[in-house]
Image 1 (tube, rainbow, N blue to C red):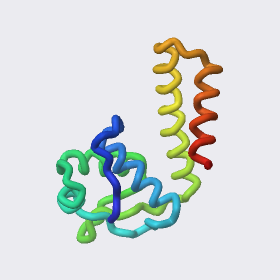
Image 2 (image 1 turned 180 degrees about the horizontal axis):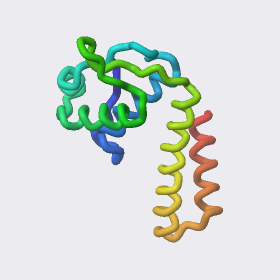
Image 3 (image 1 turned 60 degrees about the horizontal axis):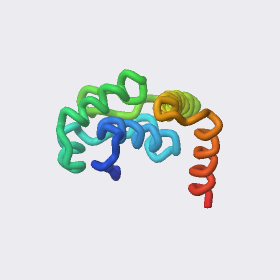
Image 4 (image 1 turned 90 degrees about the vertical axis):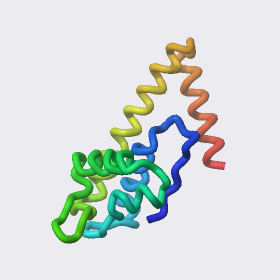
Length: 126
């Protein structure tokens, strides 16, 4: 399974794994019943700790996105894309609130943050 891990990111590696698997489910790259790599295999492929991958899988399992099947390993659960979209939106909302809190602590007004957000989004679209 192809994933890109940014070790320079402030985002913990386990969260990067969770977000990428959620994205693959949302865009249909992974569907119900598809097998995920074994924890040790993915850890080796990504050159990260087994504990890191285990934590990512535990989060995905708690969210109902993956499940363990005897004899098959870890597979994608039968979930609707709308559920994934809602889950991702909740994750993004949390990050936005964290960003708002951080920017306010740095003395930025809401208007300054909104303007900066518009600038960044505009840069991405181009």
